[in-house]
View 1: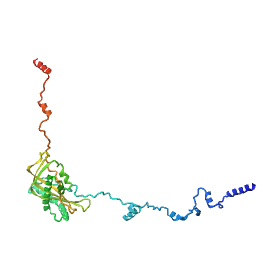
View 2 (view 1 turned 60 degrees about the vertical axis):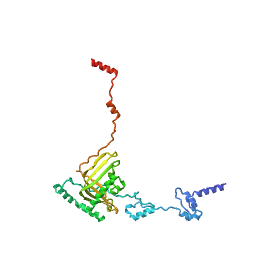
View 3 (view 1 turned 45 degrees about the horizontal axis):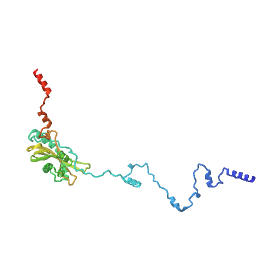
View 4 (view 1 turned 180 degrees about the vertical axis):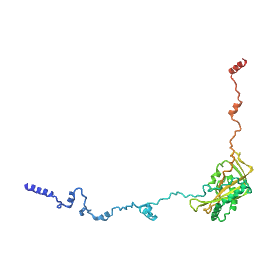
Length: 336
């Protein structure tokens, strides 16, 4: 018994040694608290069958350069970065292409001189108007030169005759209410203005004669969106004699007369898309000067019944019959 106790004390004393050099490596790691694990040869997997696959089982992360700015990269470098990261290029927000066939108005509109068409060129005011027109003719000549770059056969006197034919065709087509043909003669801007309030009405229009030959008084060119997309506008002066009569849906005359001709002085703008190879001259707008007096409004027609209202007729023809007591009372008052 004594020998067993002595052996136990010796073993305890041996285990309480400060040095751990006599312990196995695994026991040495276990004895140290709050220390990092150490991998040793004997801690590897016992089967080296999948060693190569376990070695390749990790993800390589390409850390982007956060200090890199997109402004400093070229277009090719930007494409390379987007391909590496699998980013699609931004899609332009153009769902469908659009086509601009005419402008939205008149650029640099012509200002007609006051009293034009009434003053003779021999008078002082007429001569003054001629001089002012010559002064403003420089820009028009530059625009005509630019039109000839696209249309070599353009000549102002010949175009004035062509413009008069377009003007007459547009009005005749409007009287016929042929919408499809009218869209080929007038621009998309003038079409709604011509067709406004035309439904349920009958129009009688006739071009009688020209009091003065039509002439080109103004020409301008401009570009839209791009420098190559050029539009031309030419203002033509018409002094003619016409008849106009408008009837409502009941056949009553609203405006004008079919027999009484009137002198008309008009400034009509024609437009062409010069950049379009198949562009044609079309009626675009009519210039109304400020000094022109306002036109007389059309007559408002309404329905008139053939017979007068029943209530009003009864009120006029009905006689008031007094009662018997009221009649006796009135007689006694009269005798007294």
